[in-house]
Length: 335
Image (cartoon, rainbow, N blue to C red; front, side, top):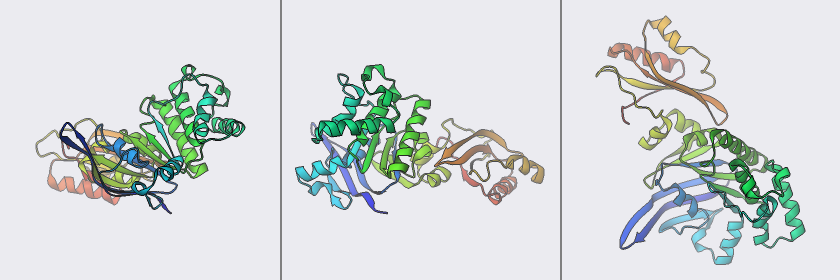
């Protein structure tokens, strides 16, 4: 599998009124051909700056960004334009032209590269069919819902047959139901067209739903990178734990209490392991939080529990859960 993007020791520093701000700090990562790669972080973490280095909308201060082995910084203007034709981008704000119809908006990217009118009209119709908006071809954006506008933006991005689709917070302005529909559409496009997709988001639920791998950006640093199922099951960095763990704080009922996170996948989610613990050991635990979700199409779940107070009993419970194939990790309060 080829590397579409390869970043090596990338720094990005902004200078303003004699002051410097470093948005990216020594970031190295690769994006593989055909995968859906997530880049996640809190607001101001540097993720949008990072994605804009992938098509050289942002020049890096040092380090290299390569596209299929070509250092983007070394490309002349004409070569860079050709590369950018292979990299389409969609945004949170849709960026549609209100004075143009839906089909004219889809044609826009083809018009820019000089595609003949008849060809671009036929291609635009094909793209609208892919995103399920054929009947809206002659409508204007003002008459569309947010989800429909984003579908038009996706159709426009696909019209030039890109190798990569960059999605910068593309679902942040949409409600959860519409977000799910757009993510399902992107997953379908990825599978059917073998299109590499890079998704920038601050929502772990977006990454968990469709991404293959994820990079977590924290204060300009690459805090963690790996397959989504591994990061969900066993986050290593503080930034990853903040994104993966339930958001409500947990306080043990006793100063000596211990709180742990149990993670199970689809093969274990139907096993009543808490009941089994009580029946087989007589030990009881306090359930503080529990939920299940789909991560890469596989059912995963997590449960936050407080273990019994005696150290011996705590270890017995932990050993019991691990023997059942569960991942067990300690939760530090205010982690």
